Amino acid sequence: MPAPMRFDARYYRRFYGGPGKTHSASEIARLAAGVDGLAAWLGVELRSVLDVGAGTGLWRSWFRRHRPEVRYRSIEVSPYACERYGHELRDISRWRARERFDLVVCHSVLQYLDDAAAERALDNIGRMSRGLLYLEAVTRSDLPILDLDKSDTQIHVRSGAWYRSRLGRHFFQVGAGLWGSRRSPIQLFDLEGPGALESRR
Ligand SMILES: C[S@@+](CC[C@H](N)C(=O)[O-])C[C@H]1O[C@@H](n2cnc3c(N)ncnc32)[C@H](O)[C@@H]1O
View (tube, rainbow, N blue to C red):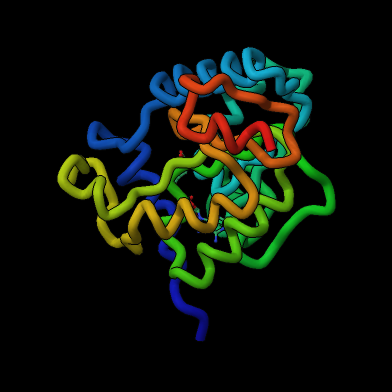
């Protein structure tokens, strides 16, 4: 018998519906607007976006409203979220598209995957990227500042070094959650981000 799906109606009600919600639409709107602005500043034209583990579709709402010309694909492992919010049913640890995207969003997803799956997911994301990745994943160092009332604590906690070494195969760090694909045209000035010198290789 297949295991019951953890990401069901109750999950989205608990973390996206009530007063204890993890991210509100207005918070994500501010973040998406910032990422869009930084992409323009860094010379990455956003024509296509892939949203990995898109949940209730908060990022997509912002893009639909403010960048309707962008081709937006959103994927989800949860059949409930696919049905309810309209995403493609895909497991990022086992799927990669043939195309490459100007922006990949992976917000609060990788901590739900075990080490082997998260490593495969990062590889898939890297291979589908040609511009920027926006990544947020909780690491061990974040635990003291995690708001336990709003956060799902049933997650795989790894070190930042674990993520950095896998991300480094495909990306250099820009900052503020952004990673530049090694295929991108981005060149950072020295003080713009920790991966400035790497971005010029
Ligand atoms: C905390 S929610 C984040 C939702 C959205 N990214 C956001 O920030 O609002 C985590 C989501 O990741 C999805 N997810 C977990 N494992 C996944 C996988 N292997 N492939 C695709 N999506 C996955 C879950 O179904 C869930 O909707």
